Amino acid sequence: MAYTYKEEFIRFMVSNGVLRFGQFTLKSGRLAPYFINTGNYKTGKQLAKLGEYYAACIKDNGLEADTLVGPAYKGIPLSVATAIASYKEYGTEFNYCFDRKEVKDHGEGGLFVGKQLEDNEKVIIIEDVMTSGKALKEILPKLEAAAKVNVVGMIISVDRREKALDSDLSAVSAAKQDFGIDVYSVVTMDDIIEAIEKGVIDGKEHLEAMYAYRNTYGAK
Image 1 (cartoon, rainbow, N blue to C red):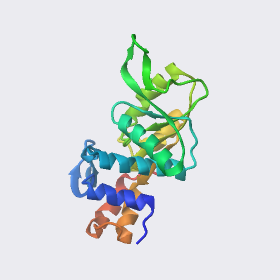
Image 2: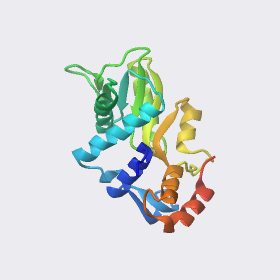
Image 3: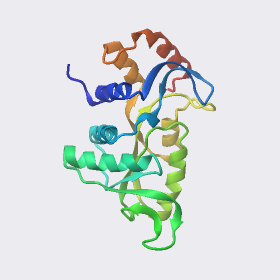
Image 4: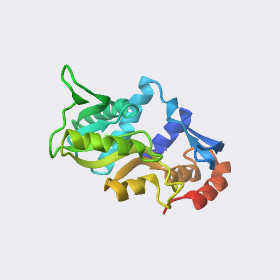
């Protein structure tokens, strides 16, 4: 059976213990029927595959940019892997850079390691997940301080499409509303549900709970 890159990614998450089903109490206090633990990505093989899925997402959404920005710390290896995969898979060459936690005042100096950002440069921010939008809030002032760049989008692995605790908007929708930035995900909660329905992954016994959770907490 031929799978789309989204379906392959969902299978990849399950096989690596990143996506699990059951009953999980989230940090928000909500009882969820599924859990995503990106901390289970820890090998070079996994990182190489992750880069391919991120690169496919960029290609699929027709995003064009000069530089990939990986917010410290989780975004650093992801941006590097995505840059490598984009070149190997599609012949697209991106610069990459990542931020320091504090400005370096010696050597080459500056706040960013890698490509030194310039005015009008198009950048894509690479992150693992978006729960509250904290990483985006932290990286944007740093980008603005470095140069007048054009953020054409942000790529994350999974969009839970879940309401925030104090809003009917998801973190992704809030990013668009608050910062004018489009956030693209390799997959969404709806993609995961569809993968179970189609038999791409096992878990049909969890569908009822998945539907109920989406109906209760799903963002519009």
